[in-house]
Length: 152
Image 1 (cartoon, rainbow, N blue to C red):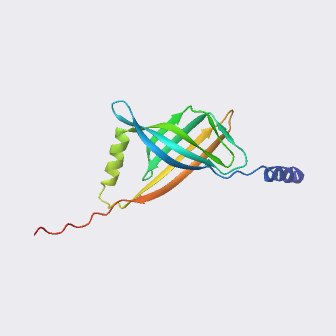
Image 2 (tube, one colour):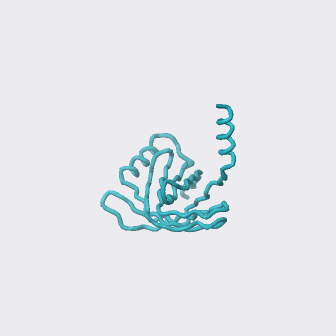
């Protein structure tokens, strides 16, 4: 039993490690949607800091704002992110009006909001069961309103 455990641990240690993909939003375009939704074409810049290229045949992305799901999208786009290279992948995403209202109501709950937190996660799906997952998060400050000078 001890020999089997040592063998399994040694096999796991010899597996090549992969650095995570770096994904940023390169652009956003408006596209037509249905009645109660907003649709956008989000262009993701995917950087591969690994020795091996990543072949993919599908993309999924989810965007959370303030800890709540805001937009999701899928695309059957195929391509390759070269080794130590990058590619731009277009994904149509949908934001429902109900999600937008929920976000606004969360902001208007009486607490002052000076920063918006976001998290983007997703995956590039390969053939079979392989996929390369990615995640990015951050926050941005809302512009502060300055007090107006009294009229003269």
